[in-house]
Length: 233
Image (cartoon, rainbow, N blue to C red; front, top):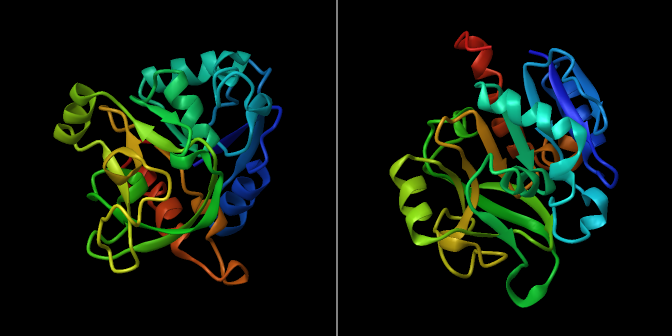
């Protein structure tokens, strides 16, 4: 599989993701500058974390209009696989490739911490290899990560099994206390109805090795390789 990592002015997790793909997944990866008009024949596109355009106006709102995003949108609408992490998740929501929005954190505080997640199911590549009966530990670093949507949208994503991960405590209990940003129903990650576009606020690329004292992120990223095994890429 060939991965493409889009780089916007203000991206700061692109190198982390490139390292995770090339050194951990052992897959080819290229950087895609935001002004490009080609995805360079990549099989899977990743929008990394950071502060695209300085988060001016609203997180992800300006990046959504970068030239390469029209290519990403067309790619996704034609069944191509796209993942957004943190700021990338915000950009996907601003682009209407994912439902809902990411609002300012509860109490207006930037949160940088290790949190626990629980996979809602194993129905998408992002959570295909993550046990549903235990918690995994993944870092967060965001000020606008509070997932929100209206009631009809919430009912729809639940009915379509579009919730990927929820925030939980270390024992896997989904509680208000384990919710770091006030996200609706502890939602930490979702996908689209077609299950080819994925977004999550926590950073799996920051939990991929012994040097980082955490390997839980590898379960998420290795799940992406199941697409090749299923011959859908």
